[in-house]
Image (tube, rainbow, N blue to C red; front, side, top):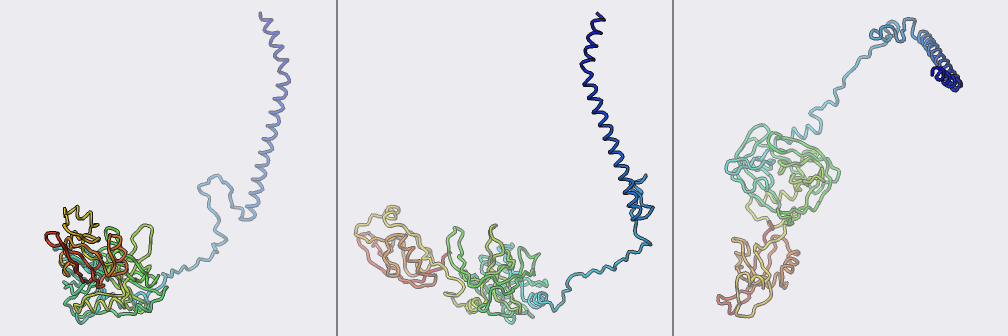
Length: 417
């Protein structure tokens, strides 16, 4: 048995002899290559050491025994010059600077409007003195609309209770009055001469009173911009002609002044496009047109027309297509009647009501135009604006619905709300 295994092992050794030789050759090659790598590495290190030594002195250490103690050379005899650094501090702003000059001159005429409803803060806006002798303050109508008390606070901390002199919803302007001495009125500029690109500044109270006296700057981005104003239902109620600016205008800036570089008020900041898709689009009411409105409000005169806003007209009625309305109200006429619109309701104290329009009248003509449907009336109203006088013909039943008569109603169109 042992002889058998010995014989098999011998055969095995004979078969693997060539493999062992090949393996030995590979090992020899690897050993030689390793030796060459070590030799090249050592030679390179010696050469680098010599080069560095020649360039930086004999004390230079390359990867010395204690790496944490290694420090670079600082130069022969520490001869690097040390510069004298001077801090400029930026541009020095003085009182002669245009920006500070405007704020210093104009801000005493500006103020915060605090509107209260039943003793509680309702809204905050901005305003400015337009007449120092009489204590007149200009602001926006929407700042003081439907409130019970108004206060005016200047940036120096003085505060006054204001009286509403007059207000107009269409132009969005209002005049207040305070009993105060030593007021400083703004200088009124000419908004008709504005040029696109002209520098302007706004002063007001954005957001709340903690930011009172905020000044922002920008340019005139556009003049004579036609901006449609909508109500809560999204219906266009008026079109305003405004100044466009990229001055930062935010809630609370409403009613504040827009100044030119000479410190003249050329506009009244009123609104901005509030949408995440828009940025830097604000608007102001031209001061030249606003002054005429201020005069009318102070004099107690009605504001029927202006270059600031064109309000859409409204009659102040609820209307039905005729046949539907007759069924809705359960009316069964015992006579012939014309085509038209049935009046379902008339707003109390509206111009049409005061002119004699009554519930269940049938509107047959408007300004001489035949009316048979709501679409007919809408098309005709496109040719009118608030403040226009118009004649409306109606057919009115008698009490027994056995007959009727035509009546002309003459009235002034109200402004859409």
